[in-house]
Length: 226
Image 1: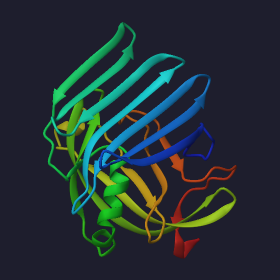
Image 2: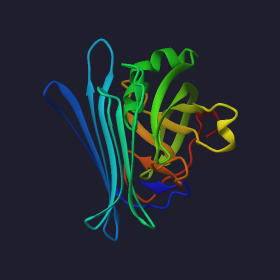
Image 3: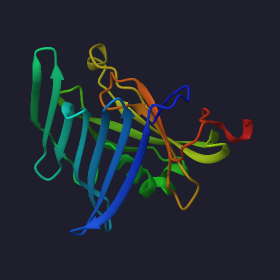
Image 4: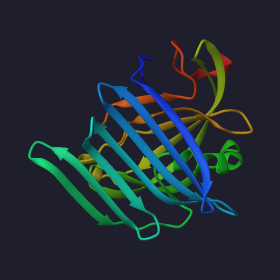
């Protein structure tokens, strides 16, 4: 995980396995000084990709700073966040469209499944569950933005650029600003290469997550201009 300037914030570990017929993913980051982040997700695979669970939490030592969880079966979404007057909790029943609603790393898998349609120029609308810290569901549009090259780990890598753009009603834009998220996948067979977006809440700093470590991490630029 890095700042957009390329400065390293911390190292991460990605694990996945199949358990109880579900694809389970765990991503953890060590950001130093006792600060850790962990994201977990579970998916049902088959004729369509269906997200079943998602959680994200940040700790300093053993102290919970914030945590977000979603049960996609029940639609229950919960947030807990440490504020000046203590740990606060928000809980909502959100509307989940089966196979059309995702959170966190779920959008990487969704992009892999939708790649062919997006590369042909189609714009696909899905739903995203996010936190402000109150849980909420927003519509997002997924689109393809060409092939880029980026410096990563002393190499110049090529990646397909996809954008996730939130669709916020005009009146809500006065109160909520949700940045776009950009994801790069490796050329087919598609796999994760880079992610740029707010760490968790829309007001968080924009960070970059690279597939490979190393001292170098440069901005993505259109391949034909590199």
